[in-house]
Length: 510
Image 1 (tube, rainbow, N blue to C red):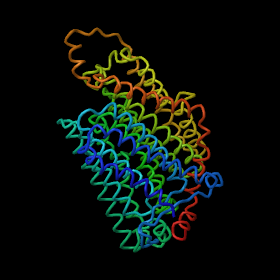
Image 2 (tube, rainbow, N blue to C red):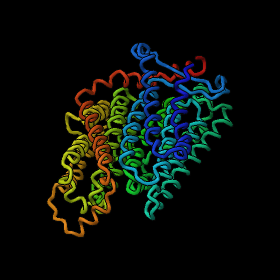
Image 3 (spheres, helix red, strand yellow):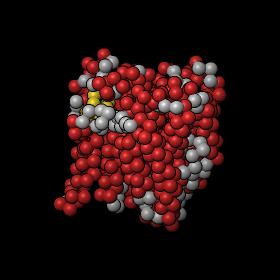
Image 4 (cartoon, rainbow, N blue to C red):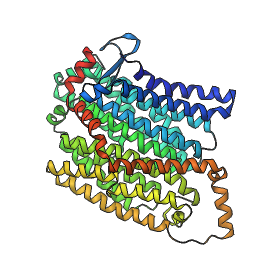
């Protein structure tokens, strides 16, 4: 047993609960404590990797921890294999960058914001590490409540409406997931994912179909896949930029992980094929991707555009994974990594640039690129990576996705990849051109601008926010040039998806 994987959940959870106490002692210590919490989380991950580096190279990495010493299938088990390790690493890195960005961006109610943020961090880690279906439900409900509160963080009418809509959809998804958990327990007498996986094929086909449909509907709502996509763009528009970076950059990837874990590890993709659900799911995901890009093309709001773009990319990722081939897994997971950093980087860049605008509307984006050219150039680089421009990371991941579709002779999937890139050229270039347009400000405009951008009232805040934008851009460029760095972790993750028997053996017998 390795207790470090338990502390990956306890450290952010403990940080969240201690922040109010730190505020009572000395509010100025809050930021130091917040940084300490996220750095300790990063340190734990680094020690896990360094202590198990040889096992990682040999391909036999696996860690687990039994809560209370109770072994499965009775007790609650935390497990970390190649797939969950990869998601933990990229999630922790993005959490670190967004925390630093938030120090420069969040002004009012910082204490409440960080409490919610670290609860999201704890729930994300819990979702990635638990080997128990009920605890996945607990953690996704925790994600729903905390992220809903952050969407309504601005406390205005628009943000409150977006938060309510978000909560309605996601609470419904959580209830469906809970119903699926109950049916599994009543039929199999266990919620340990390995034990369920071992016995799921013994259920009647009608029960298998019902359980699969319930879990599928729940997760599709969470991911914003057609026909459950209309709550997502408004949530992105209304929330503060670091919150949208979390929603698009982190939460959507956690739900993709849950999708993979439930339908490959627990239910089993052979069962999905036997129930004739795989082709239907593939077509739905591709159609969702198509709609996301079409809606982005007609959007006149930059944050909603990025939200619709996320729908397009998540649909494409879901579809390529559903090919159930090694090439599909490689391209899909590489694009998960790529999209996490591209989209989080775009939202943090928007947080900086939109301080110069009266609204998020296209017409008000005029001239923002002339206010801080270096940040806008970083913003453009991230957009080009989203389009799939070489040598950026988005090009490498889209290339492997395209090749996976062609290899599987899924020509509609290949068309969606190309269509998404071509439409992205149009809807992103509009904003790039608008950002470089000359604008003459009146005296009233200048007064309103100064009043509406408290971020620049403190110089160090501006430097922090712009630095994180550059950091995301550097990641996209650096890993675009050296994307082969991901070969080993991707192969480990793919092996974890395919080799379900090893997961069952290690969890139940390890």
